[in-house]
Amino acid sequence: MQKVNWGIIGLGSVAKEFIDGFKKSSNAILTGLASKDINKINYYKKNHQLKVRYYFDDYEKIIEEKNVDIIYLALPTFLHKKWTINCLNKKKFVLVEKPSMMNFSEITEVDKHPNSNKFFFEAFMYLFHPQIKKVFELIRDEEIGELVSMESYFGNNILTKKNFFGFIKKKKINPKRRIFNKEMGGGCILDLGCYPVSFAVQLASIKNAVNYKNIKYTNKIIKLGTTGVEIDSFLNIEFDNDFSCKIGASFSQNIGKGTVIVGTRGKIIIEDTWTANPSKIILRKKDKDKIFNFQLKKNIYAYEIEAISEQILDQSKINKQCIKIDQSKIFLNILDSWKN
Image (cartoon, rainbow, N blue to C red; front, side, top):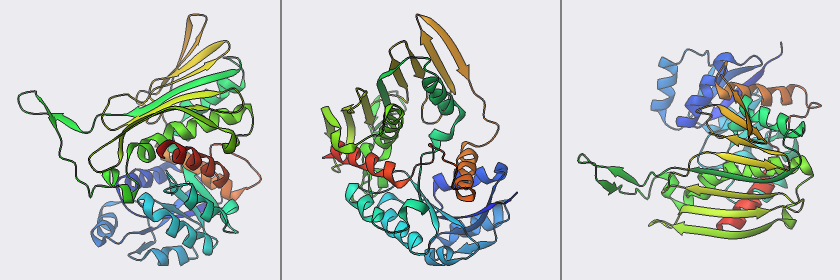
């Protein structure tokens, strides 16, 4: 079987989980790693069992490496535009960690690149989980009738903690930490809100193509923290095909990771949409529930790696869970409208 050679730029916590996905990927090989932190490079050299051929402390060198077919860009969001364009300049496939860019202006600039449509992907690993594939299957089979609405959240209180005596105490916010730093793409909308936004667009697209110029927004709520980023935010989205969504993201409330999708003849309830813990969906029709449980046979990132690799090996096959730049533009237009 032909295999795709992958390289990774940035070796943070997400990249570590992504790397584990190669252990059971059937059509992909991890070929190169790049980080400006020599300690991280040495860690993977000494401790990782994968046979990585190339290690770089220079991002440009891994992009120029002819034996690397695609780069997974696992850098902070504010660095995505520069390094995505550098990959496209070399006609290198690039999978950009979500959210792909800081704003709609940046993704529009990237889209002007002649190689963007062919070589660009955005990473939303939850879309490749078997539970989400089942959700789309149930909807396309009209198990809940015609789509009407969705309610979806992603949030957890990370701003307080209990002290030794059980009293609630506010945590000290580090303004240099990425999620609390506006210049680095912090805030709950970009960090967490991109998940329900992406899911909303995917579902709306089942009915017909989404035109971001025709989307309406209501009931916007934004609460800013001490560093100027959103710590709480909610929004209602009305697509032009009679599909509406209520979404929320939070750093200060335990609003969970659940989603409810409503149709004319029933609903689908997802207990944990984004990390699938538990991996369970409920099909509810006329007060009768049908429960689906899922057990992964491999790391969730392995499914994502295989799907992207398949798209590279055979570009005639269309996998709608593989996010191309046209959809990324819609996501960022909605995120901009939510933030501003």
